[in-house]
Image (cartoon, rainbow over all chains, first blue to last red; front, side):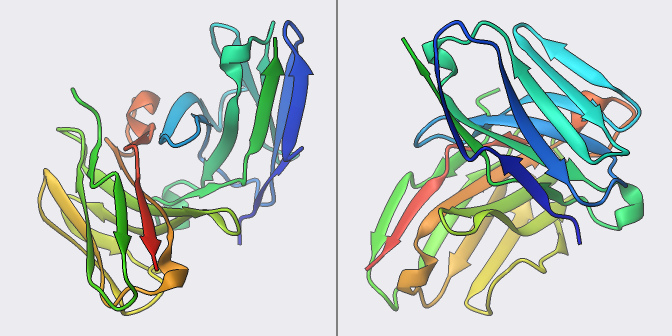
Length: 115
Length: 118
């Protein structure tokens, strides 16, 4: 059974720092992985999607990497800003061989960037 | 596109009452998902539909929960009777689904329904 873990659960950093959020999954047979952002009282917004055949994806100040063999993904945020404060979740899908189109979510990292 | 639309945004009800949550997915998306989010259990998939057909309802907690998708633009999640432990945020999400275009696989979430059962 796939399990997704995100450490740390919470993180507080001063503005301008580069930071790394971690996501670990127990079953390396994934098809893709998505990183989401959730603001308080809001839904989730997909930030980046990495296919299992890819090593990384970039969008602006965000860079997500994937090491499928070790069951890890990292989300790198460059030059953090107070507006980056949110909860970040990762989710994995096992692909067609899993027999279901079900994403398994981690519990998230709550990020606070201090001005 | 207006995105995934959920209603109501907030629902407060008393134990034993029927609750109906509504969702309008993004036009053209073939997959619709119902999730529940709590502090204790995080984000859990309750059920998902493909082309209006329920595919996997293994996450539906009890027979008190039911979901329907009568057409491609509307879905409901019903709880009858409701209990205090059903209090949570319920999200609907949609996706174009597995595709040769990876971006089609992105999940798009609604703003959620905050349910409080007293």
